[in-house]
Image (cartoon, rainbow, N blue to C red; front, side, top):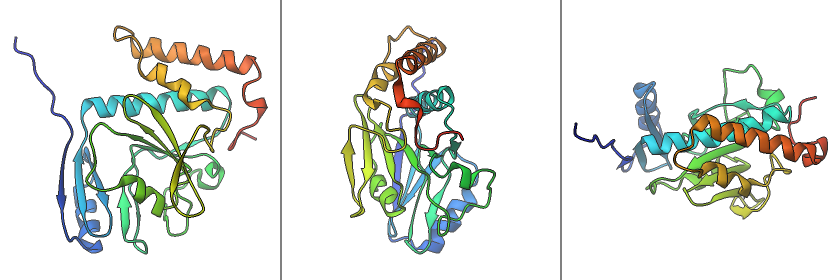
Length: 223
């Protein structure tokens, strides 16, 4: 039986696209396995690979395990389309969460980023390079924090008052969490199942909590 090679990520760009055209294309595509990035001029289409989806799903599950164990309320928005006509910008993150604003956004389905806060944290997996600067799009939309995973390092990017991101050793949304420690659970032994990996991670989180991890407080903590 011949081996089947799954397709890698593919990207192509439409240039000189206006806002109405972007919105029409985005809405017409509906539910699809394609991400759109729009910087006000250029519209990028990105198909996601199995490697990309597995990596972003695992990172999301690690984050959700931490918040579950520490009883921190979060609201996941997945790859929700984030766009603002007044900024002429739009994109779809790999994963996104409200944490500090979870209570405000709980139960909402009519999200309007011109009046509502953007997600407090977005996860980005970089398997291939984007033609459109996705980090700049997140900054324009006011996303306070982005975690970037490139298969080697997990970087925490915090939004500064000047509208630019800078790398930080600490998360703003989860200040107690040593984010760099997550890398060893993102890159485990190849023979290890994902279930075993997550079980080991949950045990590690509980050990840290037993040692006084977090001091009983965190941004967005359940109350």
